[in-house]
Image (cartoon, rainbow, N blue to C red; front, side):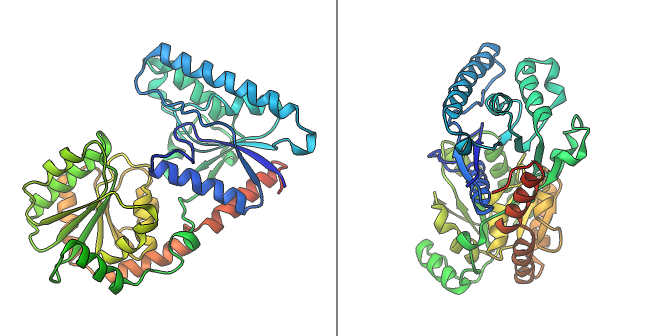
Length: 379
C-alpha cells in the first residue's frame, strides 16, 4: 500500500484537546485512508507561535528542521518500496508554518500537498515577516493546495497556476457521525428530562469551546443579539467548556430567555443534541467554516450564523439556514426573528440533503485520489 506522510502544524490529529481543527485533521487522514493510502504521522510538533517574537520564530523553525532531517534519514534507510510517496500538510499560515513538509519533500523528491493554507501579504513587512516568508515558501512549493474555505483562494493570489488550487468542501464522515438523522422525539425527550425543560418553546443551541478571543466574541455577540431581539420564549442551550467559562456565563447573566449550560459534550454525544434542538445559533466570529455548523446540518438542524470566511460555503442562506452580516449584533438579532418565523423542519431536511450530496467523506476521498493520481501517486 502506498504510504503518505501527514503533518498538521497547528494541532496533530491525535492531540488530546478537542477542536474543529483536530476534527478536520482526523477526517482528512480518514479520507486519505479511504482512498487507499497508508498514512503515517510525520511529526506531532506544534509550530504555532503565539506572538511576533522573532527569536521564538527562529527557534521553532530550527526545531522543525531538525525533526525533518531525522525523518529524512529514517526514510532513506528504508527499502525503496516502503518509502512514502508524498507529504500532506493540513492548515498552515503565518502563525503555524509548515517548516517540515517542504524540507522533507525536497530531500525525498516527492510531491508536497497542503490543505487549508492561507497567505497574508500584510505580514510581509511587520514582526511576522520571518514566519510569513516560511508560509509563503511552503505555499509556493505545494504541488496542490486543497481549499476548504472558498475565501482561501482570494488570499492565494501568489499561486499563478490555478490548477494547483483544488476545491475541497468541508466534510464529515456521515457513516460514522450520523448515518441517519437521530430520532428527534427520543433525543428531545431525553434532553428535556436531563435539563428539566418543559413546554413547547423553541430550543436554540450554541456549540463552541469557551476560550478567549474569537470564541468568546461569538458568545458575546449571541448574548447581545438575544437582548436586542427581546426573545423571551426560547430556551438557549449552550454546549461547551473552557477557561473563559466565567466570562461566557457573565455575558448571558441578563438574557431575556432561559439559558442552560450543558458543559462539555463528548463528540459521540453531539448528534442527538443537534437533533433535539430547533435552531443552531452561532455568530462564527472569524471562523474558517465551523465544524459545528456542518455537524448540525448533518443532523437536520438548520443554522443561523455570521457569514465569516467559508461559512457561506456550507450554509445556504434561506435554504439550509440563515446568514447574517459578520459580527453585526443588530443583523444577528433580526436573523433570530427571521429564523424563528420560518419553517425550520423543512430547512433542516434540506440541510441534511445538502450534507449528503456535497459534504460527505466519499467525495473528499475521490478528490484526494484524483489529485494524487495526477501527480503519479496511486494507492
